[in-house]
Image (cartoon, rainbow, N blue to C red; front, side, top):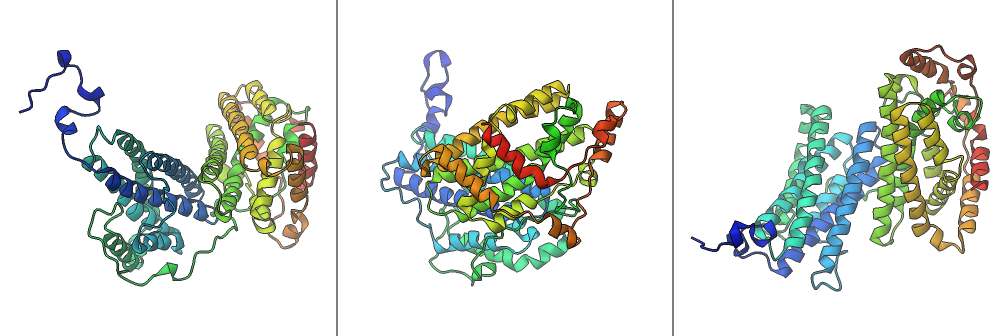
Length: 475
């Protein structure tokens, strides 16, 4: 029995563990670093998968979930890179692949052909394996000597458990017995890969042999930049409502303007779809680039959900009433190179900073007497300030000055063709003006009569590029 006593029974060792626990042997620095590198590899591959599969995933809720989980993974990659760098490890060797079997494991999930198999691979195999590895680290390492790693693992486990919970519910909702049976052989192959890899953390029995041939990854993965939407988006080519024209017109009062801002926020679904294409198709950047860009991607997904919440708060079923288009992400992803998409993103962001930009939207939100609108626009504005900084850090620095960077973004944006009339001629859309019925529904919730002036609002999307150029010119 240990007779060690602290002064007046105060917590020993800063409260991180007991004295007997601190006396237990643990991982050496070398063994610890070996495991950390494998967690790093797993998080990096998960980040790649969540980002790469986001755009072409049609289900809105999964787009949002993938956006968040990609952000989580990017943050934990950064934390692990920093920790490995603290542990006598120059050069770090963080780009090395820790075994062929682990590489195949993640390649297979990346290449899975259906949403159901993707969910099973991510949330029944990869995420639980990572969770088990982090938990094992906490059991095996010395809590005092390796406390910086312990802290990283504890924080990581909070979000891994959140990811696992989300995935479990998604699988319960979308994967039936037939789907699972079709995926049975493939899921067994993933298990074989993990076992041959010595489990995700390498603590099991390692095998140099690849247990089976590749399934889906026999053909290398190719990023799909065409955005897809589920059946709740019946008219993704609809460009019949120009939110900016309405919002900046002084004749309209704040209340309907904040309703239009909920639409603007929800419409930002296409920003993660476009940003995912930049991240997926841009190679050989420092990791901080991918971390920062993924943070912005997640922010834009949050903004879309703010719009979703705004409509729900008003009792408006947005899938039935609001036509949320994907024409912006479709055009940029299919017509421009990654650096040109980033240029357009930066150009548009510059129009959000002057008085007719985010401050104006926040003021409208406050004036509308809608507490959610004021709150959401307050945070949306703060996010955009951060995004402007990200743009300066990773886009503007490659130009002589900010003016040249904006000019290039203007030039790239001017080359993007929005096939307004062509989409209509092909029967893809009628560009229906859905605004009056949404405004009427909001007025019913507010208990007021619709304003005839607001009700008769009608415009076309053709003025958007000119509007944006005017905004940027005033910045």
